Amino acid sequence: MNTDDLSTETDKAIFYTAESYHHSLTLQFGLLASRCKNDNDYLEKANKLIQV
Image 1: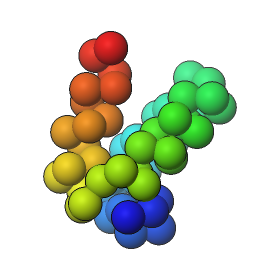
Image 2: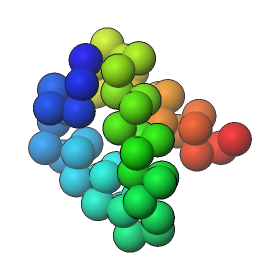
Image 3: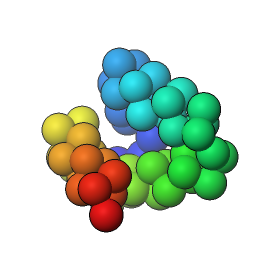
């Protein structure tokens, strides 16, 4: 999947928030989408990325 496949809610929640911290963080979340099957999978992996 790519970032265009994310729901509007997920897109806003992740990317707008990440961008408010640092552009590089936004890029990391964007790259993560290519390894996910759907929104739920993306959110689970994003949560793990945050906890690292």
